[in-house]
Length: 269
Image 1 (cartoon, rainbow, N blue to C red):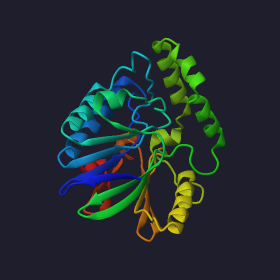
Image 2 (image 1 turned 45 degrees about the vertical axis):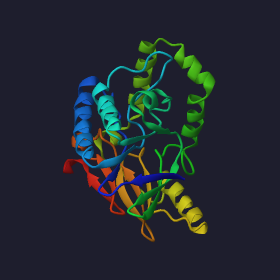
Image 3 (image 1 turned 120 degrees about the vertical axis):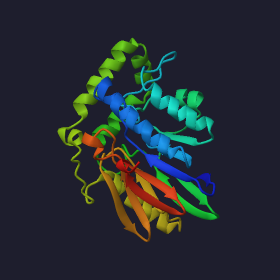
Image 4 (image 1 turned 180 degrees about the vertical axis):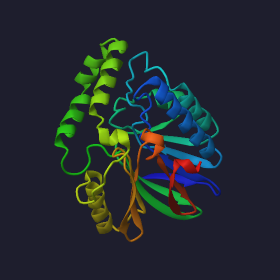
């Protein structure tokens, strides 16, 4: 359980799935500037910003280089960290190979697993479970096997010996072929009976209830459907959507302030 102190008058913000770099530089740059406008708004009263994975459509840290681009985004995060705003970054399935660069350069705190947090706000304790969401719950076994291959040290070594121009190009081709028309249109359906992250969350709720450790929020990304699904007893499952759907249709974020979570569309910035 990670303890986070939110000072009076400050807030924590949560967003996910920016996929910077997709599908090309021009479209990604428009999205990057939109995200920076949101971060500039957040910067006014944030104590913590939680970015729940897939910030980049591809990210790999070679020994001496990282993928070019995203300088506005990374510069904004560095600026916020320099002002004392804590930046929390979760590893997603598109940026599985985040290692130490973001920690060293912008002071980000990196998480590679779903993590429990206890937010202390004005003397009150608010508990939440945060994660990206890939590979959780029952099913999706093909991806789970693929993920283990991707993160295996031998696979990382073999990819690293490729020239970055080749490796990055291959990764983007792979990413583009895996994005369905449904995801690209922003019309992502949600079935509470089959959604694997929600099934995982329900298991966690049962475990938390037995331990008398009920959480107020279970917050994930990955599925690209913005949703606030009530779990009873004042708990909610949030999925934060994505920021590359047409006209930012699915670009939602979450705010924790005054002991309450508020789910908002980015158009409200």
